Image (cartoon, rainbow over all chains, first blue to last red; front, side, top):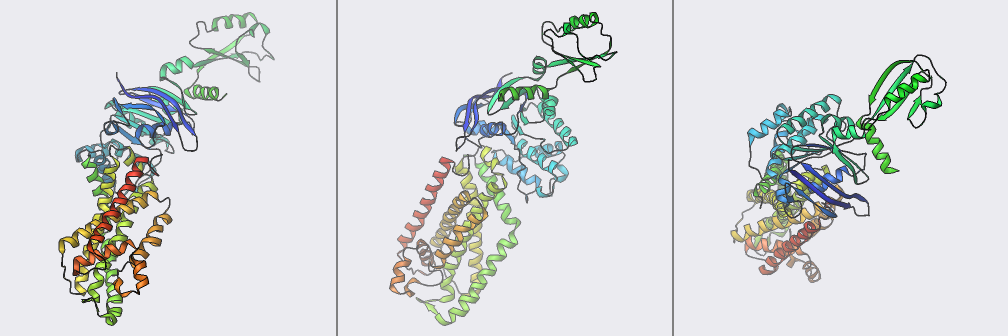
Length: 310
Length: 253
């Protein structure tokens, strides 16, 4: 796969001195879905706005499909579709007209068949003659997606596509994203719903304080940083754990004294489970049940952001 | 040039105009008729003729100018302010269009609208007074140039404005008084000498005078001054727009 988006040391300092991006470098492969995770104010929207031409970069470079966003802005922007975070639509215009307008703005010839396909795909065809002000919030968001897709972009930016959207619609949106990926569209979405990144992304980037803390394949990220917890339930409650068990291992006893939690790294050479079992047995503890639990992307994310702040 | 984008902006803007065609069409017709009733009938019955032209006919060029100037400004300023206000400007900024194309699209549509209204007024006026146009090509050229120039000015105001109040500020406080005091309804030769001199500092005088010359062959100031004034004003607006777009002032952060 070749990289379709190449961001090098991108910085953005707003008037007044606020440094929204502190040198972001990122390369995105064609056809992948990258989820950018970050808390509010992390720089997600600034990053997208700068790539798309809404704000200008203070320094650094961005290539889209090999075209520089400043010197070859026409070629670069032609490849990009943007779905903004805010629902920005002209209220009095009909769905069909506003989508057609978007296509025209990108210099493309009118193509009613394509617009119909997009509107049908997004379940908007029946609403094509409605004015956008008459639509529900979820429908409006779909109109924004239709507008972004109207010029057949190869890279689609979705800035918090499911913010304030109900669960059902969110699942619909994920399906739409999966369909787009199947069509070969590269998708970069920002979100602060970890669940969303976990569900649809191929790679996950974590951004905070204008810095990209990490970008990694979702699966390997979860594996690499993932910790597992082993919960051991005891037959009889104990007041405290024998000293022999406590040397160097990450163990904790529940308040009722009936369960012991052991946290370990799945990628470590030795997980230490076998040794722990043997030690517990020789300490006279009788086990009733065992349970393991994988940490979620959310735990990883919170860990990273806190680490960055400390 | 991305002409398809220019066309898209132009068509989209014109669609707004046609959506509200009744308002766009009826309101200038009614206000022109009112001007004719009030100025033409009431005052005209006392003035009769100005420099050999009946008063009713004399005020037609000024009336058209008054309307195309105010309409040109309000259409263009609203046209670009509205996307800023509701946030749809993101689409323009992220599209492969240059600022020049944005200006041609928006200003072209706003100028077309005011030209359309100007012609409607001209036709309406034809029902009230006998009109003859001495220099039709010059008349049309003046009309088109004025429509474009003031649409450019409106565009600048729309970019500058941060609120609807500011959007109204320049037209209400500066442009309307200048147009009213620019000889729309009188010849400046009717003023006392002192005020004649003061009036010459009003740029709109030159526009109305030139336009009136195209109708009746008579002017308050030499026709070349008028041409110079409209060309200079347009150049000024273009210069301001070029600067705005080079710096991204109030558009791109």
